[in-house]
Length: 238
Image (tube, rainbow, N blue to C red; front, side, top):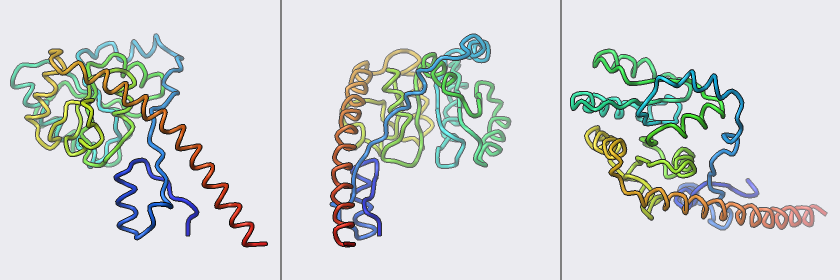
């Protein structure tokens, strides 16, 4: 019964059309873009004090849901600990009922390098992004999400799900099996040692610019389509 349907990615458009038997012509794509509010600065000194103890950070900006797959990162942290690598992992976001499970694993394996920040304000997010060594995104959902875009925006190396390669075709991330702790640990070591492909940074920035340009076109196209639909609706009503 909707006038138009908006999705964030071509693959989602294809699946919505197939699953709900809806014409593709009715579905518009408006891609995700990174938040601009991170640019605002408020309490830099207090933020520096809050996070000054954190060095060698890998940042996972995701709420604590089961499908965000934090557990695989914890298993990778256990491997890194055994190998003597001093790496910290920062988990931001609110607990959605999964943190107790993670806390239990952390306690059982005596992991000292895992930090849950809870909800971060925009200026805190900006600081953590700027100071981290890299960004990891082990979510089992896709095909797109905002944190990878933010990693590209901050020009940080990104560890991403290899099942979502359709979204990072141009070499913008270290693609791994996010259910494989060994693969995660190896990718983290590449970042910490600075041995990842440096082209990923430039490719990510280029891809982000392309997305931003496309979103402007998407808004214009959607506006035109809505005008046609609304005019047609009023014409029929009269």
